[in-house]
Length: 395
Image 1 (cartoon, rainbow, N blue to C red):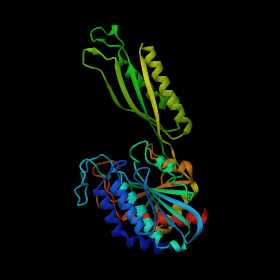
Image 2: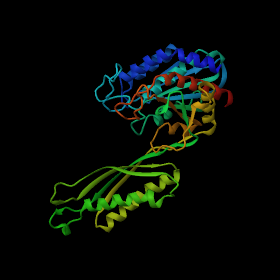
Image 3: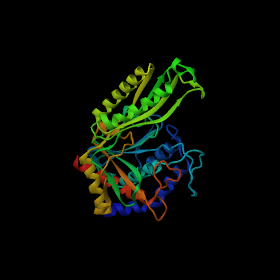
Image 4: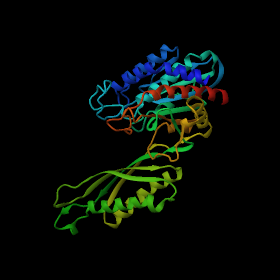
């Protein structure tokens, strides 16, 4: 079965390339994925699946019912593009000015559609169900995963395990990246306003310099990961935007800071949130100022289940060879809202290799020249299909 499945997947190469390019040429950002959703729904209906549209606004869910009763496994792909102007000179480049699939969600969507094509041909031999979840708005927090869960995508029938896929331009085509345990960080945002009192620049003693206080706040926040957290626990506190002041000879009375905090341990996440607020309060008070502080929790930690990850590992080795699995040694401090799914049920996300140096496909995610080797898509579809079948057998 593994070899025949791979051959069947390879026969889909042209069809999958066409689908991927259609999506790529017509990128839609968060909650705008109407045409992408229409294409997905039409493809699934053409395979004879039960299809729901408009799930969490623009999401699509397809259900393949097997020939006999059993468990249910889900596959997830995200559909949204990014507000980035494409710089690739290819026939299928983006037709929408200022938008492109710079993260490869067109590849993710196509891979899961390929898995649906493969499994639909053998539905009579499947004991159980396979649910295909196409999610909007992964790139724009608070994301589309949580709304889809609230809309009931993990029930009717109840989903017992879930597999997500994300193309990876750092992994060669024909290989799959896997990691058990924490794979991606909790990604939170915070805003700080340092409030002082205005005065003439020549008489700083008559005011409270919000810019000077902000400099101390920035320094204090950088001591949180370096001095206040267990040094073997990865933590990032980044301030990406600062704005304040009126003109060169006026003491600023307000400076606004925007930042992000990334953690890989639940306790650290709670600690960092409190520590930022405490540091800001102490620094501003010591300088005679006040502050405003808000902290918004974003995507949680993405933790991959060991058992489901091993299912994908075995599927990849059976189909693509023993050397096809790349064990990811270190987690990423990036965020991914697939984490909401694995917080509800056992699941894993695998990285699908789409790097091809000979073809020039080497640019990273979110780069205006990002592109992918489409040969990876039919291979990924085969791996997903095989992993789903194994899950249904072993759950």
